[in-house]
Image (cartoon, rainbow, N blue to C red; front, side):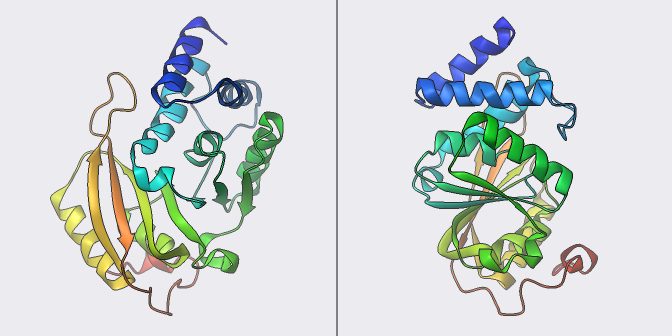
Length: 235
């Protein structure tokens, strides 16, 4: 690992109060990204990956509701972020990395094995076709998955009453937020906060959108695969 990446990783460890074992596991994650030709991301070089993958994931630790969560699902996990990094940081939590593409699931499984990350599991399934996840989670994570109304529809059935969705978003847009708020109401969710975050130097317009499950989600959800995108709840 290059010196710059080592320095940045050490700063992250200090920022979030992680220990040496956690630092080493995060370093293994970085090595897997750099060395595995099948890593499903264009950001693989360790200095960039510390920021784009690790820091951007760990910034959610600033939310107390995540730090207290026992059961977490990362939907559309892709290469494993934010769930992989947060599983390392939250050793007492159980993290499901939900991803429909077998190639991406295979990569996450290799990283979990290499890093000895035993509190996370890759779930190779479409989120709409994962009955074991229904009502089972304190927190659902979503980063760069889909338009927010779609993410809300994916997440709501997976949450316990009182649970929360954390959705990583960029620049705020009033009309998009209005549409998302209307969709949330149909799903039993309520927007709790939009938290501006600064995961690494130079980043702009990063926000964590937090929705709480205030009411039970109607039984008609989840809808069939693809319906959330094809026929949005609100336009």
